[in-house]
Every structure is written in structure tokens, then in C-alpha cells.
Image (cartoon, rainbow, N blue to C red; front, side):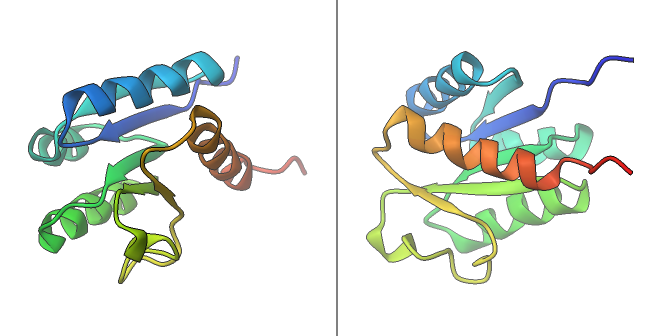
Length: 125
């Protein structure tokens, strides 16, 4: 059976930024990418599993926490995007997940996704 393509959800309050990020990832990586607003993502994450969820850090911490919790509960990984330099070294409470500061070069978000995909790939026995 062929390997399944990784599935990625891009969550951003700005539709065009989410769309651009999804386009970058789908052009650079062999993956399935969807987009959602933070509000819609809460529902999507309850009904679908994604390998990686790219989450824009929200001004309301509870929203970010809810999105991360739903992602992790389904076994997914998180990459944050943020415009705040304060998040450069990690998001409070979630320092284990990488942060890509916006605006980002296309290669930077693709490298972050690739690194997580490689780290989570099962090793052959």
C-alpha cells in the first residue's frame, strides 16, 4: 500500500494568509493542505485528524490552547505562526512547538513542516 500524503491544516484569522501558506506547502511538499479560520478550525479538529496543524497565535490565549489541545488529542503536531517577536523562542505553555514569525519566506514554513514530518516518521525495524 502506498504511503498516505501528510495532511496539514493551516489556521489563520486572515483568509489570504492561510491560503498563501497552504499554497506554499502544497507546491513544495507532497501533502494535502486545508485552511480554516480559528473559529471553524475548532469544529474541523473535532471531526478530522491532521498530521500537522499550522496555528496562528491568537490574541485570546484560550483559543490557541483549544486548538493545540484538539490537535494533540488527535495525535497531530503543531507549528505556530506569529507576528509578535515575543513568540520568537516559543509560545508560552507550548515551547515544545516551533514558531515561524510572519511575514515568513516560503522556504521557512516548508522547512519547519518538513522537519516535523521527518521527526515523526516511523523508523524501519
